[in-house]
Length: 91
Image 1 (cartoon, rainbow, N blue to C red):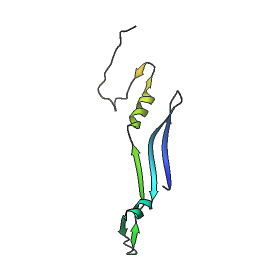
Image 2: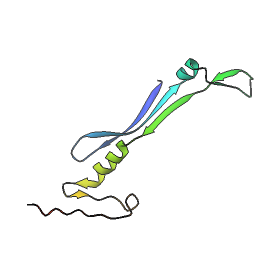
Image 3: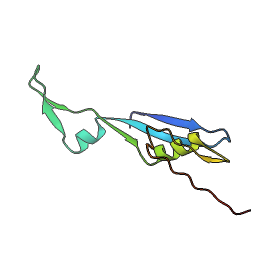
């Protein structure tokens, strides 16, 4: 791997959550698996440049971390167009 970029999120209480990643893989895997194309300018076989990226369920965790506190969770209407309230009557 040539380099990677990470999006890390800090919360009010301190923990960091990795929100997304992008990895520049270079030509390592294309050479290993012979993934190539014919360069239209030179006519030569050229190995592709690859990258990999991901946004996983960690993104949901980040949204909960940002929009919650000790009183509960309030999601933005664009994320949760239907509002639901859960009330606890226990002391």
